[in-house]
Length: 84
Image (cartoon, rainbow, N blue to C red; front, top):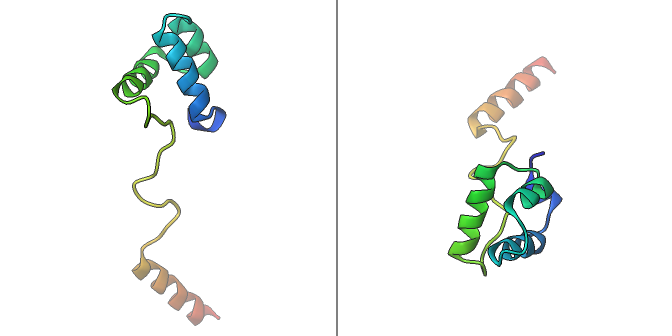
């Protein structure tokens, strides 16, 4: 089960990590809920402990997906005009 950010909100993840930090919930239980392995869980806990106020599981891509270079797009359009 991947895509933690699609299945849970930031507040839900924060609540469970806070309960883990206080010792109310075991690590294995949270891993099962999230559907992640220990390594990913430890990464989340580390990120949460660094700054709980700005912690988020959302992310932005470095560059947009499904985008082609402008020069390639111009060439494709020119070829399509020729075929037409």
